Image (cartoon, rainbow, N blue to C red; front, side, top):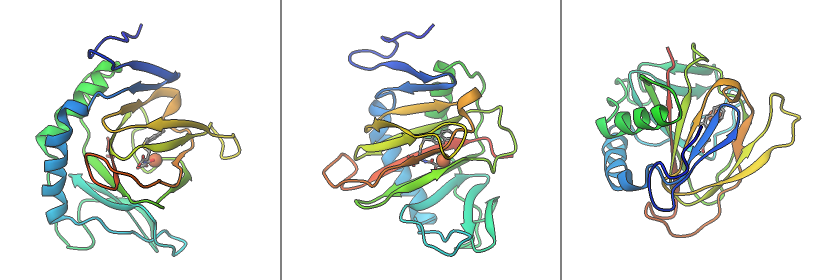
Amino acid sequence: MFAPDLFGEGRHAMPLRPGAMLLGGFAAPDAPALLEDLRRVEARAPFRNMVTPGGWPMSVAMTNCGSVGWVTDRTGYRYDPLDPQTGEPWPAMPETFRRLAGRAAEVAGYRGFEPDSCLMNRYEPGSRLSLHQDRNELDFDAPIVSVSLGLPATFLWGGATRADRPMRIRLFHGDVVVWGGPARLTFHGVDTLSGGESPAGERRYNLTFRVAR
Ligand code: MD3
Ligand code: FE
């Protein structure tokens, strides 16, 4: 069903578990253009450490592009059409982002993926993301496409409940994962990032494309 040689030398499409497809290095050729557009987005909507409803600032810095963006503050989690820090709409989703997400979804078997939101995460050495589910979106039938850039990270992938011991998967610069079907509501997180050099400097970015509304 999957074609390991689909996108050339040394790159692999690998089903992780039903519903989740790892496209190793799929975004690597586009990484310079993606990073350039990321800079344009962050110039208008800077990365910031949002506060959880419990009052703790997250170690991962976040921003968004698209017609709505994921935010958290003392009042809870939500998708908001405005950046609460600037009062302005989030920057439009760059064409490079949209095209890459659409192509990745298609390879994984999802035609016509039209994300309205891209959450952009920035990890520095020491940053981590604790186990959670993504359930603020209205449509759980649409997949989430995630793109890793920069330093490698250990992705933690649990099961349907928080108690399921997570599987550990290394994600590298240019890796793309498409999460849909039975994988869409699984618990997941990212282990503490280690230091090092990468095409994006001493940090990791993750772009997650979502159909939020
Ligand atoms: C599995 N981001 O932004 S990407 C997030 O690397 C998030 O920054 C992580 O979890 C990161 O919410 C992980 C992989 C990912 C994203 C969304 C998922 C895996 C997922 C949604 C459902 C199941
Ligand atoms: Fe998540």
